[in-house]
Length: 125
Image (tube, rainbow, N blue to C red; front, side, top):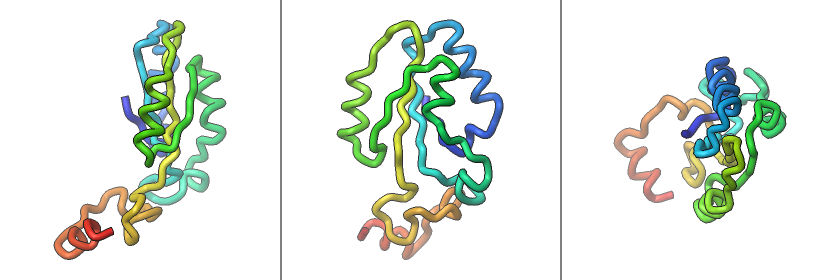
């Protein structure tokens, strides 16, 4: 399952996490995209979810972290996961729009789609 740090402001995510841990769903892997941005700006200003790893652990999860913009890092962490009676959470520390100069780190691209010349420019990056 993939979730973002911004959507963790919604209680239903934590309710599901609590149920998954309660039932020992050790075949569940949650990849938490932590890019520190959500629709209207930085998560720390809108609804701070840090310390995120501590929160997942408090809900009964096994927590790992990786560099989410580096697929080798993601794969390495996935391959090292253990099934020991609790769900796994991978906090993938990412940069929104990484590598695309006019998108990287800009919250307005949460809901925008590149058009026309923007597509060509993005592909050049």
